[in-house]
Image (cartoon, rainbow, N blue to C red; front, side):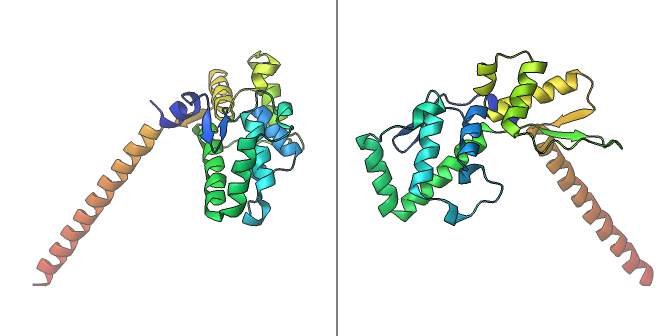
Length: 209
């Protein structure tokens, strides 16, 4: 079984970070974080972009039943958590790292190989990624729009990849088992090449004598 598939679908219902219990990172989370210009969804990540305010916003959005419920007064435990991040830079760094690990684990897409096609592709970069994914989930898979917004990033990509393959796309999923076998094959090939080269050198030395 592909390890990336299992990671995308067999995820814990809640991820503990500090005093928060985060829900699986989904398209609605991404939409709200993008609207807030969160550093967690920027293409370029720089340490100076992060502070306790935007980290708290990220954690509250991803732990709420609906992101719009995240914008309220902080509880006592949340205040204590934020103060600890402000006074302990190492702890703050570990929290930011945990947030990225959480996003990564919830966003495991399949690794695919697709044959190149000589065709002109329409520029769709102006369409926000979360909106594009929800549109495809609802139109192609007939998923309820609220369910689509709550689908984790990794699951959405896996579902749409499987749908594309079913529809005849010339795409092959490279599983983690395939990669492990490929590593073994490469190592065996290198060993064979080394043995062949040693044999050639040995024959060359004999010929000289």
